[in-house]
View 1 (cartoon, rainbow, N blue to C red):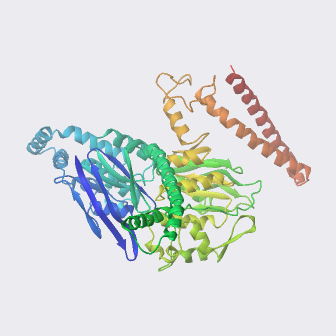
View 2 (tube, helix red, strand yellow; view 1 turned 30 degrees about the vertical axis):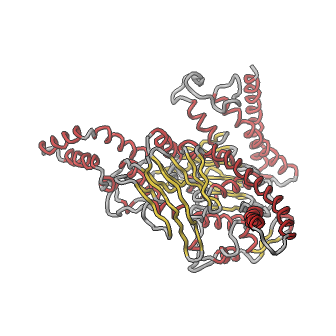
Length: 622
């Protein structure tokens, strides 16, 4: 059953053409993802489909009486209504029945009104619906439904808008970046919800796990053409590679044929026969094919990273509270060169606060942060760029200099650098306020990297970036030799980039987990909440890091084994530092006894942990 048809739509802004003559359809039960580079009109297409904008040419034809809902990136909610009032403002008849029942519960003295409301709940089979909508509110952490919209954060408003459209159960759901402002737990719940519900979806998202697990079709807009793939993200990647290989082979074949036909054209007399005229017409078709090329411009990231000394960043017994809420409590950690750490945790557990303390933009309540002399921090925040009025793209980069240093003593102009970040010469002279959300993020990333940091901190770097840019950023970060600290809800990104995780559990508890996000989820799923023997139930639970499980070790021992080598290395480094102080005579006479005691404590710990390492190694081989 066809719900909606997009027929030959085009859209331009001034001289800039976003797209033209695009056509596709959406049928019942399809779960379609729309994929395209930033700035090519993804959001404009969603607005045209939903009637918020009109195309320059073409039309959108919808099935009569079809209910459609749109989750935009900036929800349009009445600020004076409460969460509850916003939900009941829907025209869903069952919601009206539930609203009357909720009001009747608030006034138990009016037995007649309660009885009528109760009967209407029975008549409309609303009991299950009420349970479902309360579960949706609970999963999206919107329990206090008496809060007014105007008092909510941007993320909370997005979750309210998401709750409203899920509760209203439309025939067709249009989603623009649905996972933005959701924590990992919410994203995984939403994935499962969409996967099991018979809903028709059309969405724009950069979340590749979401694409993999939810979508059954992907439509890609590339170089002005639409390509459709009847499968999930893995299928799309495989088939796109096949398509590109076939296109390149076709272009190569056309080039060879073009050379032969060009020679024939040069030999032809001016007089034309019908046969030669037909061949000449074919020649121009071949010429166009032979000169076509893929616009696969890839973002080139290259920086002249500052040399990094032995001391990186140290946190000593750092604590932070906001009123009665504990964010950090006596947290200590010494970062090593080349570490790649991901930070995960529910919203509100203090991830961004931790980054602000680390970068010394916020003071801790207690403890201290020590940054090594050679360390140059690069901090990519969620706030992004704050351009001056009527500032152009190139002006942003020129604030750092007309010429930017690269590796091996080379330099590059501001204009050339922007071209590497996919801003062509024309785009460089656009006003910054005209850029799309993804283009703004790409420009901001450029400003962070050109300062040549050797300790890179990224707070939600993947929001609003298209999949092409994400892949390039990931490849750059894989080769990045400095320290890397990433807060992200993008599980695909985290799996590819980080080696271990700081898991923010809340109330100041931070766990150092030795693995990436998929390892963490598998481990969490494999361990029951209450265990007496620390042994997993192999019949009912997935093995953690299957294929790399250390035989003979319990799950807690596996985790300890992976951490203990790092702890021994850290202790060895501390030992060497104190021994060096003794050898170069830099220890004050009054501190000799104290330093000797410190050294002995470290030696004892090394012996203790080394002995434990041998115990675990022996057990592993049993």
